[in-house]
Figure 1 (tube, helix red, strand yellow):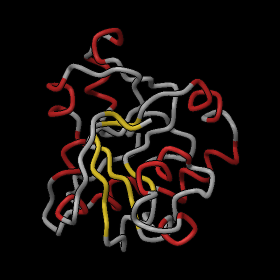
Figure 2 (cartoon, helix red, strand yellow):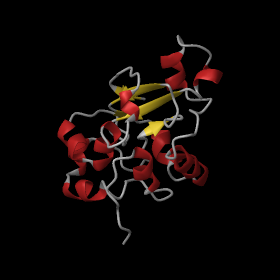
Figure 3 (cartoon, one colour):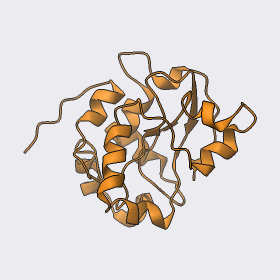
Figure 4 (cartoon, helix red, strand yellow):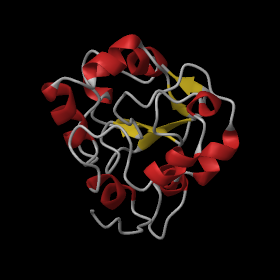
Length: 167
């Protein structure tokens, strides 16, 4: 069994995530105690705590959790998608060119080809959900706590544009 080191750094935290893993090892004991029908998270998807160059982005859009599309679950089974998420969890990967959701929300800030390298999206809840209403689950998940707190300056301390659930 792999030892999970408590950390308040979001990048160190997600570096503990195994390639292709659907649940962060630190979150697993919490999910093991919960009724899967009560929390509303789609745990067959890869966690999407953030997207974009979170380490350096001058603008961070803050959302509750990533939305859910059926292709999020089917994509989680593909090696190229798993590789992309593994790179993404390192905090330097730009938002994909074809990320229509992020492009729609940032179209007033400039050209998408430039913005995708300067904007990141941070989700308090890392797990995909179509609807979400059990906020106590977020408070119990280490992945949520590390997204909004820490011993280092948090990405959430930068400029934020808040919303509901990301799609």
